[in-house]
Length: 266
Image (tube, rainbow, N blue to C red; front, side, top):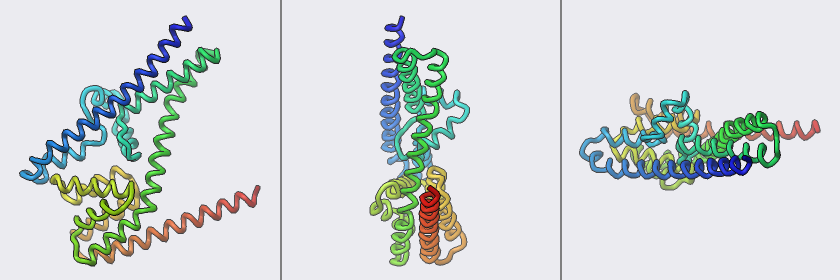
């Protein structure tokens, strides 16, 4: 009986990993196929199917992915959290990894360590549920912090371009070309969406919802207001860059002061 359970656990773990990798690969293949197919229609019909295709590349798919989307109560929220990591992680792959992790923990606790089956089941369920959630949250937070640290440099680059007479779209393209990840990747994605027919405001707001970073949302609002009312966009962005740098410096000072207080208390 124990040999059968061990074999079953190993099989489930292997199967979960296999389907997780397969889902990620098939998802990337579908995204690439949709983007290639969208190049032709995008030139003939700006603002139509191409932009919609690009905005739907955050993990939506067919088959199993759609079924999971209907079954899970908060599949859209999970998909957004996975997108904030900057990795191509599908909902299917995430759930398969969670199930495989839970199966592996159960095999170790129940069959190797001979713990109580109820305790082993609860521990395996908690591990499979919480550990991937924590890892994804850490990845998203690390990426957001990295984005915020580089974002003022991106705004400064746009300010220099605007003062040189470049349009906003060219400034965004320059940021995507010159800046490191994750800022460069997000601005390149904005450039691609505009190239395939999306309006600049639509591409910016899609990025704002995807990133869920207040500083970037304020940047998008500034651009949107300037397009509607006019004004000196370069000056507005220069002020925004200065504000963001001051906020970051203040956060670092607060963090240093709190660390000193904890050290002195010990």
